[in-house]
Image (cartoon, rainbow, N blue to C red; front, side, top):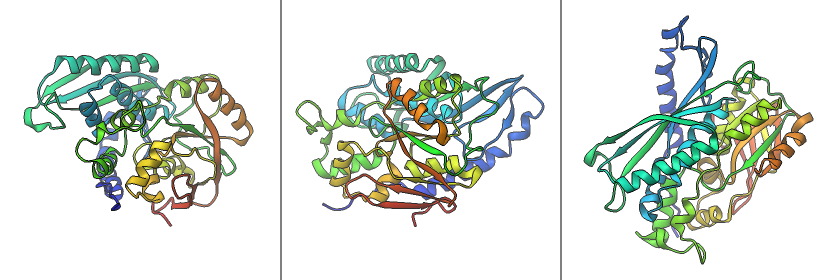
Length: 367
């Protein structure tokens, strides 16, 4: 089978993000000395600290992207709320914030009350799991500006979440205290989360044709249902660890860009590197997709989480204790590696053709 390309350009995406952040930085001083002052503007962080009269608030925005099409194809809409919540509350958790509220906007071509009900039911369930409220949102009817699969309601779904920095933290977690020898703990993912679905759809369509979602993954599950596996939400766990007084030096939410790109955001302040020689292996269905599309290890690990949904940097002294607490809280975790002085991230991949991948933390390129 012909090798499938993702259709996305990670380097261009990073460049556009840098352009957007460059313009955003020009606004940082607009609230100086007033409520809403940006107190800790951390370039490349998953969220930032805003001071509202002594209350330190974090804010971040994201969406679930083309995973929406899986719901359109399968008719299963009540799990997407977990994906929407995870994308933002876990970004807040990556800087230590306890997620508090979420507002969302649902852009649709036409209204379907049954689908809206299923989406919002799932959102409410995910909010309950995360301990957040949904104080408001917007449903915008945009007609043919929105498209999708099938003849029912098509939509895009994005959200903005706010969180509060716990009193236990003097400042947001941004990797500022990381030192060589610290350990990296990996938390297992359930699946692809909500990233890299453009490539997934291309691979499966090339293999099975237009109705690829109906093909059986196993006796009980179709490929459409398998890829719709909802995101694991990590934020309640991170908040528990912080409130229990466990020191976490850095947290990487493994989304678009994979392990290297997101862990690098945590290592920038101390110009550190990492050696990851014991990460979780990708789920079997990830390896199947990788094989069907002839996706290289390098490409797979730059687009998907490959079984690793979040990574924590902790001191060597308390790594085992923290890992035990995580396991007792119902999450799969393992000590995946350690922090190094050399400015590179070395990943011992676990995909179809295991190899050692080396990413330069300065250029962001594979060596």
